[in-house]
Amino acid sequence: MEASSAAQTYAQMIRTAFAAYQARFHVITRRARERFATRDWHGMRADATERLMLYREVIDRTEQRIRQRVGDRLHDKALWRHIRTAYSRCIADRPDAELAETFFNSVTRRIFNTVGVDPRIEFVTTDSDDSSARASITHVFEHPASTAAFAHDLLEACALSGPFRAPSADARRMARFIDRALTAQGQTGPLRRAEVLRPVFYRGIGAYLVGCLQVGDTMVPLAVAVHNHPEGMAVDAVLLDEDAISILFSFARSYFHVDTHHPNALVRFLKRILPRKRIAELYIAIGYNKHGKTELYRDLLHHFSTTTDRFVQAPGQRGMVMTVFTMASYDMVFKVIKDRFDPPKTTTRRDVKERYRLVFQHDRAGRLVDAQEFEHLRLSRRLFSDDLLETLLNVAGSTVHLDDHRVIIDHCYVERRVTPLDLFVRTQDEADARAALLEYGDAIKDLIRTNIFPGDLLLKNFGVTRHGRVVFYDYDELGFVTDYDFRRKPKAQTHLEEMSAEAWFYVGPDDVFPEEFQVTMGVSDALMEAFVEAHGELFTAEYWTDVKTRIQEGAILPILPYPPRKRLPHRRKIPPDALTTPAYAHG
Ligand SMILES: Nc1ncnc2c1ncn2[C@@H]1O[C@H](COP(=O)(O)OP(=O)(O)O)[C@@H](O)[C@H]1O
Ligand SMILES: [Mg+2]
Image 1: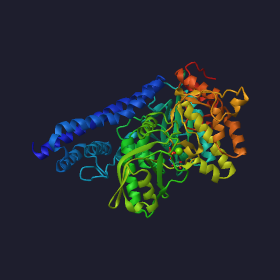
Image 2 (image 1 turned 30 degrees about the horizontal axis):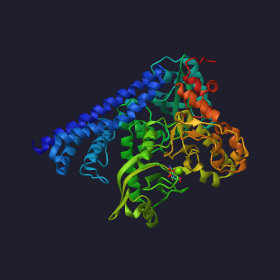
Image 3 (image 1 turned 45 degrees about the vertical axis):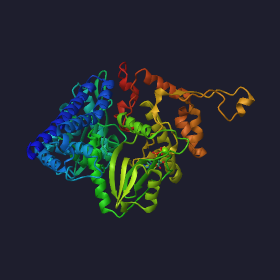
Image 4 (image 1 turned 90 degrees about the vertical axis):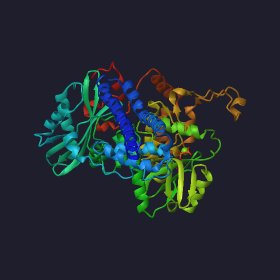
């Protein structure tokens, strides 16, 4: 075959594989509407897992096929330059061209095991801009007669399939809530216009309508949470501020299922209402995590090329398994698995990676930090202080290498930086420390409800986000609640037993004694007292066992991604658990 026609053929192969990936992605994503309508929460969960595995599966197969077809010329870079050019032409008019480029990169990086980035065979920057599609992805409501009229029209126009139980009453309540919240925000102008994304955002038991309001001259972001009760759908909550919607889109939550053929336009719209979120995070939030990673990579290289700042060890206690660095001017951390783990850690590198994978596939509940896995990262030597570099080479020499003026990192996780909770509690004033500690209890409870036992509950493994939320980031001891036995410590019968330093009763490898958590917290008496008052049950085996039993019985214990005060007043009395209970009757 002549070079250009061969290139054309291979480019077509990759394009076809990408199209097939997107087709399957859309099929799974579109199911969310039906799952929500039929309250099939287990099905929704299975879909989420299936979609998370899809990319790797398709890339594996594509790589294999390409290897077979291209044969001897597999590593011929000149050929790949032609393939890249041909590919570029055949994806140009796709509205998701930027995702197609990332897909191509995934294939070539596999084949070449590329270190750093090779711009001859990869797409480095994208000029994809599908913003002209904006009109087609939003509903616009011009000059609504009243907030109630807008709310009414929105519920009627939105693409939720099932009927609302009481649409007029919901619209009225929603309008009252919005008017009150806007007044409280000092927004007194008229509601001139609203623009709401047509695709519905589904996740867990929730469906969300996302958009913005123009109130007077101000833009106010909007998210409307809808639940489906046995009696029909109902608006549960309305979010009207950037912080609340940012928390809904948090990097510690699982990805939304949003059916759109214009991801670029959708992400740009989201960026307008959430200007502090990176483009990368927004792609990730809608399930295009691989492309999000591409965007993140571009963002970090751009930052590093424009700063004189240097990497430092991440503040907080040094890890026994991970060595972690960050940069003051960049809010991400880089986590490298150490060559050897400090005792008493007995885990292996493979096991650590397995836990990060588990977290990737599991419901993150707003409490587990999402990590992007990078391979063959190449960074300029000048970004590293001598001290840090020495440490990295010392404790992770099998992963970190020095090559001329570059530092090569064979494998690392990149994730959002938070303030380690132990540092936070020590350095903030009493009121903030107390609030964070109570959040920590809530975080543990949310994790338990999603069947996650963090393993290592020490404060140093949790962090505080810029919104004051507490999240967990140390995964090497994480497991499923249902795999453990939560036991009460038996009372010592004899003096000898009591004096014994070793446990005198049998302790199995899966035994956990919640009473012991108390000892390891290491906070002041006053803080401990506040914690026990709010979350004392966490120190009892009964609490853990109760949740464990409910999970084993097949219950889904939902977590609302907003505080109760954001719920419409008549919804506040409905506990989240009721939302998944078929027998629940409306009060
Ligand atoms: N996302 C993060 N944000 C800020 N600091 C972090 C983050 N992840 C880890 N760290 C810092 O790195 C240290 C070690 O990381 P950790 O994930 O706890 O690994 P290890 O299993 O080795 O303890 C933590 O104690 C903390 O100081
Ligand atoms: Mg740790």
